[in-house]
Length: 146
Image (cartoon, rainbow, N blue to C red; front, top):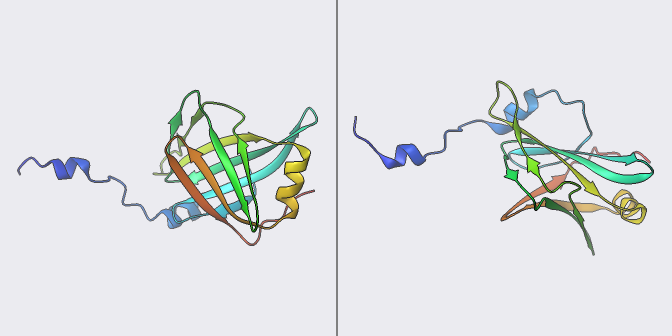
């Protein structure tokens, strides 16, 4: 067997992500959006009277970011809203015995921004990590808890 760089550089993951994600039983949030390889769980929380958004990405996406954090953009029909991550370090953790990852990120927001997200129709959400943008489409079954 001859040595080949192409074998080294090939992706090692031939996972059927949607099937793998469906096997994950996640009760720690409300499914908000999805794309071909990942699901986003999103909930509005409050700590010390200050609102924030708790998000969790489950799927093939994996990252490790230090000191710069990320942003989350909500795209509405005629407007956008961009939120900054609460923590500047973002790291994915592999889910045991699967090829999938779990990435938890909280975002700061104020009452007006929370109300806008809850009342206006969101067409798409985008995470911006350093030089990578992940886009997701909201699922129809998401209900906002007020």
